[in-house]
Length: 140
Length: 171
Image 1 (cartoon, rainbow over the protein chains, first blue to last red):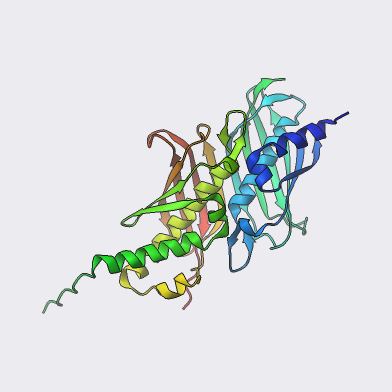
Image 2: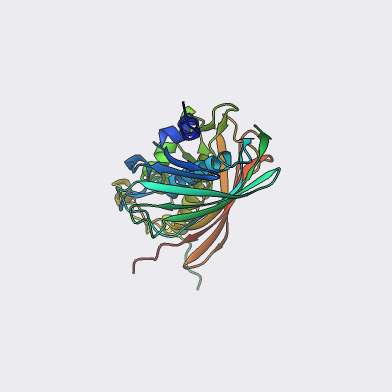
């Protein structure tokens, strides 16, 4: 039988842009999601250093936050980003995959609140942090 | 006595320098190329253009542009506009070295400190446009607001405010 994580994984992989960026859902709990994105030269923002563009990290954060909302026990039928703020704390190390962890820490009838961090191989020293609000659409 | 006024440069000379600088900024960044973004220039005013593409979709049911793509589009427009404004004086005076730029010697770009994106409506499967306004640009930090729209200039589908660390001039 397909587990909830399998279903969620298929769901993420059915998103054309997330698929194009090679995103892979590795963990999913109640209101928690972990998504990995491999390093890719086409996503570089600074050709001199090979550091990934912030925009690619934004796409990862947005996908991961949305997945955390969908995995919440309140079981929203769908979600969309209302706003998302991203803080870039340091440049990601070139060549390393980025892992985003998002937590949907509060859900009302209409709004889900999420925070997330992104790390490279140095997991104790985040590359970026995010906080956002998402819509809650028709419960399943 | 009044200084004799310098004769204005021929239009093609100044246009060549402006376009070469803009091209270097946009074509030098792999991620901008990956998204398929372009910039249109009218004098010093820039408009970011994101032609629609299947790989930009985030919700295949609607379909709608991925929120991350929207955020990236706004961020790229802010960074390019900020760099462009920062380089403008050197482009106009001719101090900029277009040969180095064309050979891939990209000027150093501002770094994003933070960016906050508001999603006002879903991004339709259409081309998108964005323009940035620099609200404050100091020696070290800059604050930029960006607006994005699709069919109607007055119906924004997203806006963002970001803070950027400016590159330090090499003395």
